[in-house]
Every structure is written in C-alpha cells, then in structure tokens.
Length: 370
Ligand SMILES: *Cc1c(COP(=O)(O)O)cnc(C)c1O
Image (cartoon, rainbow, N blue to C red; front, side, top):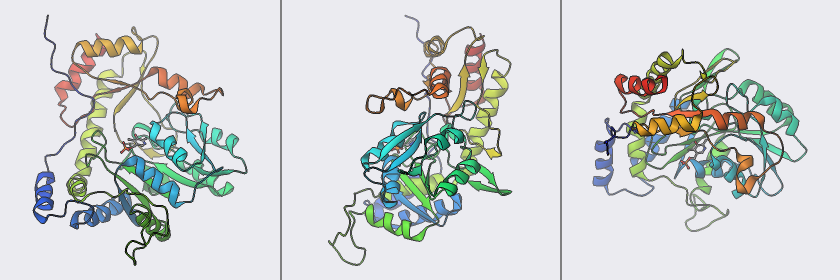
C-alpha cells in the first residue's frame, strides 16, 4: 500500500514560549492545585487583554458558561436565546441551570446569531441572549446589545473561539468578551490560546465577579471556612494551567498574527476557485482566525464529503461545521433553521495549527484546486 504523507492535523498548539519555564516554577513551588501565583497573574493579564475589569478563571470553557449563567441567577423557566449553529456546550450550560434554551437561526454570511431572529423569539420569560462569535467571527453586537437593552436582557458572549476579535461600537474598537454582561472563553488544546483544559469569564461587574469566585469554589463564604451559603461548584483552574495560560497570553498578539497570516494565505490560494467562498461581515468588526473557515458549494466539482475524503487521502485533516442544535437528540426542533442547516452542510474548517508553514498551505490548497 502506498504510504500517505503524515497527517496534517486540524489544530496544533504553540508551546515554545515560557510555558515550560512557568510550569516548572509552579511545580517547584509545590502549588499545583488552585492556589499559587500564576492564577492571579493570568487573570489580571487576561482582563487587561480583553479590556474588562475582572477575569475569573475556570476549569474549562463549559464551566465558564455554566458559572456565568449561574451568577446571573438563570434558573427554572427562564428562556435563554442561543444560536442554532454552535458547539454543544453553549446550549448545555443553559440546561445545567434548568433554563429553557430557545434556538435562533444564524446569519448566512457572518455565521453568527441573527439579530432579527432574536427579536422574533423574545417573550416575557426571556432572560438572556448568548451570542457566539463563531470560528473567530464577531456576532453583530451593536444590534444585539440594542435589542438586549430595549428588552432588559442579559448578554453572555460565548467567545470560546474568538480571543482578541474586535467590534466597533460608538466609534471605539472593543474586544469581544467585554461587550455583554459577561464574556466566556475556552483554553482547550485546539483553541487560539490553551491551558490544556481551561476557561475564563470576563466582566466589568464587581458583584458578578465576586459571586463567580464564590460559586467556582463550592459556594464557600470567602470569610468563613467550610461555610457554604450557595450550592456552588468545583470549577477552579489550577496553578499549572494558569502557568501555561500566562505564557500563552504573553505571546497572544504574535499568535493572532500567525493565524491571520495563515488565513490570508488560504484566501489568496483559494479565492479563484468557483464554489469556494468565505464568511463575510457587513458590520464593523475585526475577526480573528480560530479554524480557517470556508464554504463548499456548486459549481465546485466535489461536494463537501468528497472533498473531506480527498484531503484525508492526502494526509490532510479537515472538519465539517457543527451539527445544528435543532438536530441534536436533546434539542430537537421542527422549526425552520435554513441558514444554520445550509452552513452546517457546506461549511468546512481547514488545518489551522501553529505548526503550519506556507508550503503546507500551498499543498493543502493544491489538493483543493486540482
Ligand atoms: C470550545 C467551546 C466551548 C467549550 O469549551 P471547553 O473548554 O471545551 O469546555 C464552548 N463554546 C464554544 C463555541 C466552543 O467552541
């Protein structure tokens, strides 16, 4: 059998900065659980990066979402509007709280939740909206924030895939995660920066930040040991995770530039292929590249599955878009979600790891254009 070139994976982290040094320092200090110098340093630098007042680290991105919703008091009977096209964790967090997720279709071009769809779904029971900045593309936050303010709804941004992406509001560029009441991030191994597993919630609200710190620590009263006024969780980040996170965050601008360059190379090599298109934002926003994203449709000569198989045969991994939430066994809905359905059938993510060289991108695009 002919041996194929070694697999080019969809994502590979970059750990070539101070990651090892800081982890070794954390080990030497013996503070390897959820106390130690790196937790505070990572949270402080992350808040500064996002330009939010507070940042509360968590064990992962899913616990960040659950913590955020819990701190807002989302509970039984509360409706929370989420986009139909996102990773399952967004909607599961609502379910953990006993809330009722309400699915909204997405915009066909931005891939993100559609503001006009949100408006149609608001009822007396609606408490919050969770816009997701999908694959690094900021949602239309100006419109979403206006709808939320008018209807007195909380906004929890799911920024798990969009560290550093920006939106222009009132003529000022702001980072996603600093726009709603709370912003949630993930540092899973394939995300823009990683701590292995890890998450963060950002906010300008001191009370919410304090409440989240209590809730992530078993609901324990910070002034009284083993006294627990809330049913909390163990959602703390460890000092080891934070050591990696700090080293990652020190280099995030370079990492974001690397991904942007990767994205422009892909676009340059793919732009003239009929049937290959890219997401577009018709509002002022500055996306980041998490996983390079394209759509495959006629007149391209292969359908998406055939393209995935062709790439795989040549050693290139790729990912179809998320399966829409309304098709997930626990969230079945018979309403129409035409855009989410279309995107889910035609969207494809290409390798976007920090190991890639220009020649790798040429190789991948060569397979697509052949
Ligand atoms: C990755 C991701 C999460 C969950 O993060 P974990 O750290 O894997 O728990 C939530 N929402 C979105 C949109 C994600 O991509």
